[in-house]
Length: 310
Image (cartoon, rainbow, N blue to C red):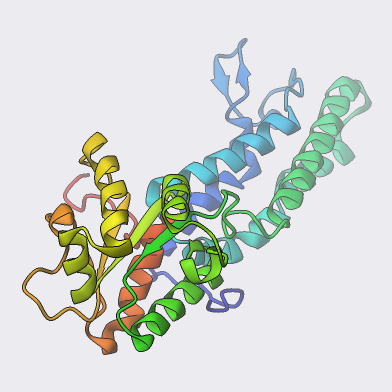
C-alpha cells in the first residue's frame, strides 16, 4: 500500500475534479440552500433576511453528507487507495466544516442592535448546530475505516487444484497465502482438511459456502476434470451442478498455470473468462487483477464530462 497522506492533488491530476465535487459538500453555506424561506419562496443564507429561524438538524445534515460521499465514491468506482488519496486531501475541509459561516455569524452578532435579540438567538442556535455537525463529521472521518477498510465480511474463496508436483503445490500455497494477507478468506485443503477427514464431505461443505472458486487449470487438472477422476473430477461434479442452476454466474474463476495444452480450461468451464499466470514477469499485474475481482475493487477511471456539451 502506498503512503497517501502527503499526496497533493494538482489541477492536472485526475483526482482534481472529484476533490472539487466533494469540497462542495463541506461548504457550510451550501447547507443553508436546503432551508426554504416560505415567506419569500427562496433558499438562502440566514443573514439575508431578518426573520430567520434556525432549522438546521445536525444529525440529518452530517448523515446526509456522509451518505452523499459514500454514494459519490461508489458511483465513480474508486479503489480503496484512490479513496484514501482524495480523503487525505479533503481532510482540512472536513476539520473546518462550518467555520467560515460561524465566524460570519459571530461578526453579525457582535454588531447587531439589541432590538434584534430574537435574530441573535437564532444565529447562536445555528452556530451550535454547525459545531455539532462539525463534531459528527470529524468523528465519522477520524475512524480510519471510512472508505478505506471494507466493513463487509471478507470473501470466502475455495481453491480447486490438482497435486501435480511439490513445486506446483508450493505455487498454489504461495498464491493462497498472499490472498489471505490481502483480505481474502481462502479455503485450501492443506489448511482446512484435517487428518482423517472425509475428502468428499470437505469438498461439498466448503464449496457450498464459498463466495467464489478459483480453479487452477494446469494440464493435469484439466485432464482429471474432463475425465471425472480424482478430487478435481469430484469438485467438477459439484461445480457443474451449481452452473446448471445459473449459467451466467461468475462464481468460478479459471486460472491458467503450467498448462501447455490447447484446452486452457476443463470443458465445463469453456467460455469462462480466465486469468493466465503463465508469464512469470506479469505475475504482479495478474495477481492484482485477480485480487480486485475477488474484493470487488475494479480499476476503472472516474467518468468525466462530455467535452462537447455546453
